[in-house]
Image (cartoon, rainbow, N blue to C red):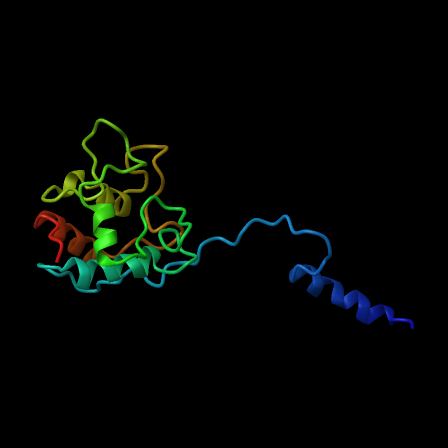
Length: 163
């Protein structure tokens, strides 16, 4: 049986694009999915709740999906936002960050101290802590909107209650 040449040649790009080129694949894993939104809190809240306001905002912009930077079982980020409110809170509040300059008093969320809360530095500065400590978050996406940052800051300033 003879296969016509033109249809056979036209099928090669489709086979290669779908990984059907034969042999093992050496391509890298797909990059994380972009965040669902970078403005999960469109109007700043003066008295935000961690579980009702902040956790959903962090999950939608940073990591609830299995393929996101801070979600799933193998996140590329240092904090996982895909857990329960209690799990995420325990990973954030009064925890020394794994990727911040040492000796400067950084804590992921330092209750009552917005200026030393690493999460605020990570979402408001392009090179927080200087070169070598990662880029502004969310990575490869538009910056978080100001109402979301203001709400996060208000929660920290109020002592980061577990509410």
